[in-house]
Length: 336
Image (tube, rainbow, N blue to C red):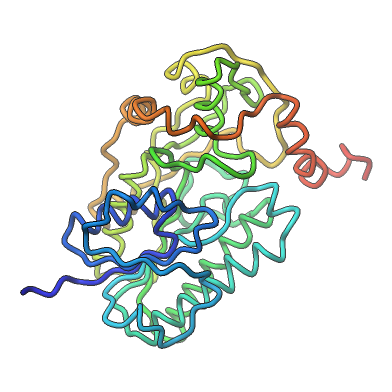
């Protein structure tokens, strides 16, 4: 019997992590998932019950060097963490604890096990209100604690590379979307909001005038970028991963189809996100393959998945984002 290579996926029951597990299983890996199931769902892994997948239900902050789950692992793909803007403003200590200290725990386990490569899931939010197209050497300007925590987690990852010689790379994800995108919790991901509104026959709550552009990248393309970042001989590098073809929110509404209600534009949100993906395509040989129209159709084909998602409207969104306006608006706009 041929021994399969072993890969660990933290946050492997989550949106991107579960697609990473799918890809690895398809490529012949034995996969070990670490997830506390606060954001991830067992249903995201249900189709893999007969596959070579082991699941450990734990918080990454509980991991200790020498954990047997890491023994013999070739790669570690680190997606585990907490997201969303408003909760990070309200609970910054928790965000720094999970996304920074939790990352340090994962790094120490990987170092003790002598893994071949750790690939960290970074966030393009670290660039803030960025120039576009955005390169990897763009100045770092986090606008809220979530963005800061993800950046500091990435800095810890590179620090472990420099000090301890741990082989690492970072994939900086722009606007990932696709099947299994989160359906519960705080107000956030536009697809979950719009698809639930579509099912309920309610208008889409479009922020601003809908002309803002987002570099939407389909989740399976994100997963292949992570695998490429693991398999490359390069180490200590960040790679921006987007489609390199920003789409407007109005275009998304057009593809889903339905009436629109416009709500106030929010401070700290860029008018455009646009990844310069030349480094990833040139040095990893990676390239996005799922056109935006195709990706939206794949989600529409599974729209019933969002039937139990929160149903947002202008009033509930205004209430949920009050903290956002309080802390991220220019100081003069909120009385100093």
